[in-house]
Amino acid sequence: MISGNSMNPTIKDHNLIFISKLFYTPERENIILVENNDGMTIIKRLIGMPNDIIEIKDHTIYVNNKPLKENYTKGLTEDMKKVTLKAGQYFVIGDNRSPVESLECRDPALGPIYRSQMKGEALFSLLPFGKLNH
Image (tube, rainbow, N blue to C red):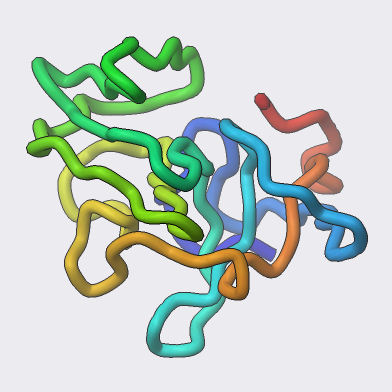
């Protein structure tokens, strides 16, 4: 059961989702469960892979200097200086880009994540029933 609005409009507060913890291989734009630095599980969209360069300019996310085509967001993404991910690092962000709606890699309290923090992939919503945007 989801608690919060960080993935709205894709996943809303109190949606019940089905996740896969088996055989998960990280892929860009997957919706994943992540264990944050406090041991809490959060749900985010994976947009940056190891060694990627991530920048947010004029409310657009650039991955390796190419704009990321997103049709699943809400709100305007605040600009961010270029970040180069190191080997083994990943970048996750919420679909709800309204300020203070999401703890994600732009927040120094989380920063880039590692494969060991990924707990699985969200595959579909059980309530309401439907496929999640990927």
